[in-house]
Image: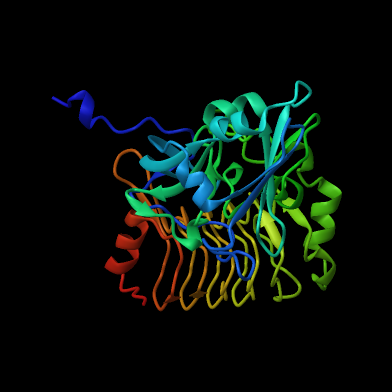
Length: 347
């Protein structure tokens, strides 16, 4: 009989368990950002503006919290133990103006990443964290100090925290502006993307028929139906096809270098010899795809699936003969085991 302690954690829809803490998003802060130079400004609708060093934060009463973390790309890490300071403790020092309704967090990154939350939610659920699972927070995870808000998809948790700003009106964050992510980001309601930005039929048709994809780079094509597609040009580098269906598409030899293909469906597609170097395929499914000779070099792979299992013991698996893997990032345990069992090895 299964005891309550051994029951698997309840997961939001579309999530896969991992015991890892995958690295997602940017890999490096702005040059020069380190524990010695870390400064956190607190401003906006506050009674007192503050500038805190890391040492100032560490002098505050430290607390430990254990919570489940859910990433929009489809992985969930149960029971992540974090140590730090609740946001509420920082804002108590600054004093909250009565007109404040939202809080914006700004990162020290080359692209100026930011995110926002309703103030009431952030006061209840957001922490400034400097330690995870008993270890100092590494730079690639946002160290020396980041925010974590367990009740929202992980893009609402910000690496390399540099500024906390209280606002009367909300401002969309970086991932919401640039990648069409949902502003509320509730994993239990599966609020991954802003449905108002789904590509319309005319836009999808124009993309399908394009002879050159230069004009499409930098634009997000969301939930486009591209099943069975045979592109006229094999250079699809740096395109952004998010949550798109490319099932059974004819994509042999396509250059996907630097593309963002997160959560897209490539099941049954012909991808022989395709190059996914430095691409983001987090949460994408390649189950049943032909990946013979494909290249995955420094590719973001958290929650990427190379097989899917169904009731009754049936498995839809990719053909990975000759698949080239070099320094993959974020591959989850079961998928890594499948690849190794089929002769795929990496550094």
